[in-house]
Every structure is written in C-alpha cells, then in structure tokens.
Image (cartoon, rainbow over all chains, first blue to last red; front, side, top):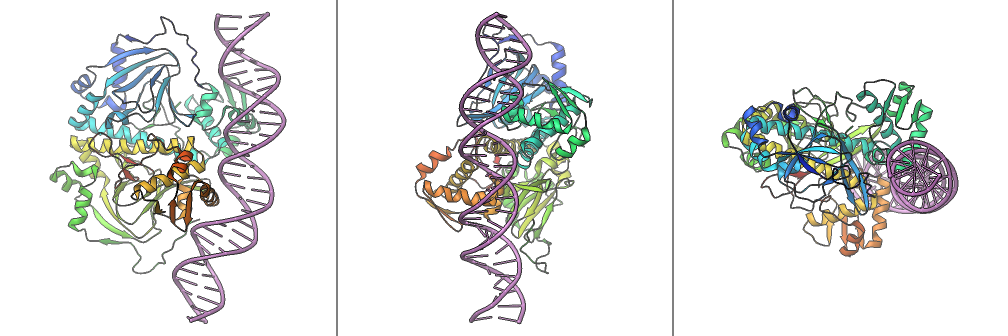
Amino acid sequence: MISVKAVASDRDTSRPMPMRPADLERVKALPLFSGASERLFRDVLAGCFLQRFPAGTTLLMEGDPVDFLYVLMDGSVELGASWNDKDTTLAILRPVSTFILAAVILDAESLMSARTIDRSDILMVSGEAMRRAAGEDAAFGFAVAQEMAGCYRGLVRAIKNQKLRGGLERLANYLITQRLRQGGGATFTLPHEKRMLASLLGMTPENFSRSLATLADYGVEIHGAEVTINRPATLERLAKPDPLIDNHQPVTDTVTGKAQRERWPLPNRDFRAA
Amino acid sequence: MISVKAVASDRDTSRPMPMRPADLERVKALPLFSGASERLFRDVLAGCFLQRFPAGTTLLMEGDPVDFLYVLMDGSVELGASWNDKDTTLAILRPVSTFILAAVILDAESLMSARTIDRSDILMVSGEAMRRAAGEDAAFGFAVAQEMAGCYRGLVRAIKNQKLRGGLERLANYLITQRLRQGGGATFTLPHEKRMLASLLGMTPENFSRSLATLADYGVEIHGAEVTINRPATLERLAKPDPLIDNHQPVTDTVTGKAQRERWPLPNRDFRAA
DNA sequence: CGGCGAATTGACGGACGTCAACTGCTGTGG
DNA sequence: CCACAGCAGTTGACGTCCGTCAATTCGCCG
C-alpha cells in the first residue's frame, strides 16, 4: 500500500539543517505571518528548526498528538487518512504551505497523516508558542482565525466537489484548474503521480485512467504526464466549473494548498492543493 | 425540489422579536463567547437583533454576501449546497449554534445556502462588529480561531466519512452516534425527515430506505422515526466507528453542529450535526 | 538486459441512482 | 365526518457508475 522510492542511506536520513535568512523571508511572506510585528515573529519562531526528510517519510500519523506547526519549505507532502484498510489522499501540498494548524490551535491529536512525497525541507514551529502568541497578540490571533477560515472554506469546496459531482466531472474540473494555475496554456503537466491524483479525486487508479481516456472525446490529449486541452469550451461544457466549488485563483500559498484572495486583504488558502 | 410546509400567512411571516435576558445568557454560554469580557460581549452584540422565521425560509443562498453572523436560538436550520441541478445537505443545525462564521471572518460570499427547517428564532450579529472585535481583542480573536479550528476538524471528519465509507457504513455510524447523543438507550428517534438525513449522508432517499431495511439483519428495528438497536455489538462490527471520524461527544453546541471538548478548554464543534 | 512499479485495458460484479408504482399519513375542504 | 389531495416513505426493476481482479504494456533505474 505504501511505496517508498528512496532507499534508506546516509544521505536520505532526516537531519537538521541550517536556517537561512531567505527561508525566514519566505515564511514571513505567508498570509499567516505577513501582518505580524518583527518582535512577535521572532518570538514565535524562537525555538523552530528546519529539517530535511527523504521521500516517503511519515511525518505524522492519524491520532498522533501534534506538537509543532509544520511549514513545508521545499518538496511536497501528502495529507491522507485511512479507515478499515482503505486510504485516501486529502490534500497534496507544495511550498510554501503550513499544515495541521487546526490541531495546533486546539492542542489536539491529528485527524490526518502527513507523508513526504519527495525529499522535503520542513520547518517545525513550536505549537505552544503559536497558541501563546495567538492568545496574546490580537492581530496575530485574527490572522490565525482568517487562516483557519480560509482552510475551512477550502474544505467546504472539497465536500461539495465530492458529494455533488461524479468522478469524470471532478477530473475535468481538476484539469481545468491545473491549466489555469500553470499559466492557462493549452498544454500543462500533471504535478504528481496519477495514482495519487486519483486518490485525491476520490477514485481508483483504474477509473482515473479510464476517465482520462474518456476525456479524449472532449479534446483532451494525454501523453504521459503531459496534458493538452484542445477544446476548452467543450471540456467546460462537461465540467461546468463553479466559483463556489472550484478555486481558480493565483496560487502560491499555504496550508493545504493554495492562496485565494478574498476581498479581505489576507489569506484564505484552499484545501485541495496543486 | 423545495417543499415548504408553512403556508404564507400573517403569523408565518418573518418578524423582529424582543431579545430576552435569557437569550443573551444562552449566547454568552457558547464557547465562542464564554471567555469574552462583559464589555466586549455588549460591544459585539450592540446592533444585533432577533428574528423569527417560518419553516422553509431561505436565509442565505450560495454566493450571497454575508453581512451577519447567524445564531440559531430555536428551531432548526439546514446548510446545503447545489450544483448542476443536484443538491445536498451539508449540515443540520439545532440550537444553540452559530453559522457561517468563516464567511463573516473573511467578509466573503457564502459557499452554502441556509434554510430554516422548522419555525426558527435566529439572532443576527453584525459581521463588521465581529471582525473588529476579533482584530482588537486577543482573547476573542483566539476564541474565533479555536472555533474555526473546531469547524475545520469537523469538516475533515466529514470528508473522511464520505470518501472512506460506503453508504451503509455511513448510516450505521450515524445511528450509533445518534444513540449515544440521545442518552445511549436501545431506542431513540431520528431527529429529522429521512429524506434530509439521506442527503446529509450522501445517498438518495430510496437507498437510505433500503439501507435501513438491510440493517434489520444487524438487529436494527425501525418503526417510523423510532429506531431500536437490539444488538449494538453486531452493528458496531459493521460500522467500525472510529474516534478520528465520528464524534461521539457530549453535544450542545454551535456552528455547524456540535460541541466536542478536546483537551483545550474551549470549543470545537463538529460539522455533521444532530 | 532484466526487474520493478506505475499505468493501461478488459472482464466482471456490486453499489448506487433513476424511474415508477404503491402505501400510509395528514391536513383540507366539501 | 368523510373523501381526497399531497407528500414522505417504501419497494421493485433496471441501468449506470465504479471498484475489483487480472493480464499486459510502458518507462525508469539498476
């Protein structure tokens, strides 16, 4: 069920890394921290450390207590869940993204597992420091609230996507979203293994493959991970994308995925990730 | 698609109501407000008003701008969503619950519709006041963050429930949850119309009915809305309830449903409601 | 070249949605 | 007081979507 590409070796073992100034800047640029004072920022990140993990490393299992806020600086991470010998991918994260903020805020056990997909650099921030800062600094507490609100809305979209659409429709909309996020050109690249995208979209790898084949009738060409959408209008007639479900925004964000700028000048990352 | 029991009449029209001291106490008892100072509490609720709506009233449609935080004081409310002529129930709320907090915090449009199921008394609190208070008062901002985190975790549970389990399993777990929430006796009452529960659980009314019939093999007796679980162990063997998906907690809460007390002394309501 | 895992394709079965008919309850109006 | 309309709920028949199992191909890396 779990496949680990990286073979255990000296260089592949997780290890602490030096934190460079450029890394700090990238963290500070996150909506969650961009409004924070220099003092608060240093305070929260005081005991943090950066660590490099090999591909396929389990960072967190379901039910684990959560002691740190994680910030993915480089690489990619899968958030997943399992029950009764089935498992599913809930989100695929890319840099720069925070994750498991909700569990940190409530000091609760994790409801999801987290696993590196590629070799990844991850910043680990003290959960206790996060809670203290959010409880003492009004601006930061509000930023956390906005962050959580954005995550929440991302999940609402995900549930609507799951309950209201069929597999083919979810796939078609996923392709449209990817196209827009990768510049809007006719051709783009699937950002992850198909089996993982299948799981993210709530289907089996077999059905994912068959659905891709079906989309040939709608002008979609597949060559390996390269996707070309020849007749966008035709595909959209099938997909019926909806701004209240799909998140066709700028991107480049946090937690669980992506940034969407609502009218409020802050965060709102949406769940289903790149 | 929409059925409204109440016939329009003088008494059924929505209308403002006087706000009693007892109502204020019930609002203040919510995790979201229980830690607030008297001053802040009065400040936030300054321009609020209580309104009575007949059954079947649409309070909010998907995409509407959200100007108020809603607090359900009496009655019941359905949160739903639709796409492409399909619709689904995302949550069923009972008093005392707040809803659409996330949209209020981000000053964004609603991703869900809200509709009264029964005649309902609803308190409407200025969204602008909520945002201002959360941004100025650290304790309140943190309470909002915790509230949102609890809602988020409720949705994570809901997605896991939806993606990892089949219809029969979702129903079995729903019945187990209801039994516990209604005191744990062998027999209890379905709290809403079966068609609505079916939609909440992501199935058609027909399949809901068939699934209930199937559960007879597992010791479940149905008479109208009365459910008797004769062999809990047998049913659990089918349902395989999981604390990381199901929320078998005290209840009596807010937003989107229910209260679950994590280790942190505050909120955390979970999504799928009573 | 050989091996492994991802991806594809086909065959099959089960779960679920759809359509339709029928039952039972309730509120309405004659 | 009863007949009837309307709707929730149930049940059956049927079709479709989707998951499972198996065989094969493809691409990558050793």
